[in-house]
Amino acid sequence: MIRKFFSILTCNLFLVSNTVQASELKNDGDYVMILHGIARSNKHMQKLATYLQKDGFDVINLSYPSTTHTIEDLTEIINKEISQKTTKDKRIHFIGYSMGGLMVRALIHKYNYKNLGRVVQLAPPNQGSEVADFVKNFWPYKKIFGPAGQQLITDQSALKHLFGEVNYELGIIAGNATIDPISSVIIPGENDGKVAVERTKLEGMKDHVVVSASHTFFPSNKEVQNQTLYFLKNGNFKH
Image (cartoon, rainbow, N blue to C red; front, side):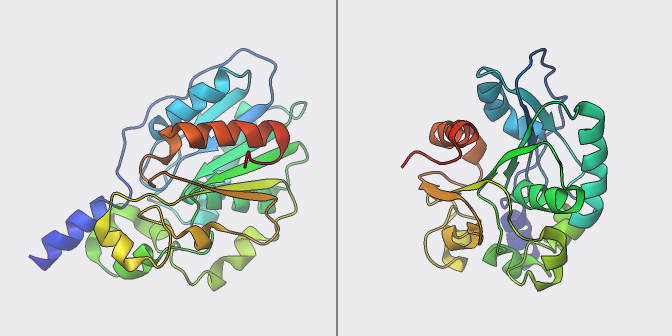
């Protein structure tokens, strides 16, 4: 009975989607590289990708094996994709949802992209998540979310070398709506059902905004999409 409870809780943390191919664009706009969260695929980010495409951005909506590698190993896998799909004559902006936001930080720190534009994190566990603390030792969580899932805990001391300082234009969008009463009991303060608002923040960020959105449906939320586009264009959010 206990195993069944935690299996349901774990599966509800980050629902798994099927992998789809990213859309191909033929325009001269800046690149926007989108990275999904753990146990997701680029399908989960497609509405946001389409929204940005309509504004003229050359959107690359990647899928990566988020549940079978550590964050450090994933940077190498993702950077190979970036190198194959981009050229250095256009700026490249990054959008990272949930763990994808951590991936963006690790990529920028490791590869120091010379054509880096602006960065938007969507509901990122920059200071970890109390939910990950709670379930990290349960076998369903370990099985579903793999090694990277163990790196989403609130003790981020072992990961500091991966991320470095924020010396780029970073905007962070946090959510304060939840549809998960169990997780919200675990998380103190305002939260989106997976990540506390306070744990999304980073020293050096240029702007931070809180929207009424739950973690699971964050990328398809209209206000999240509007604020993301606004930051890419202006370097700040609309308050």
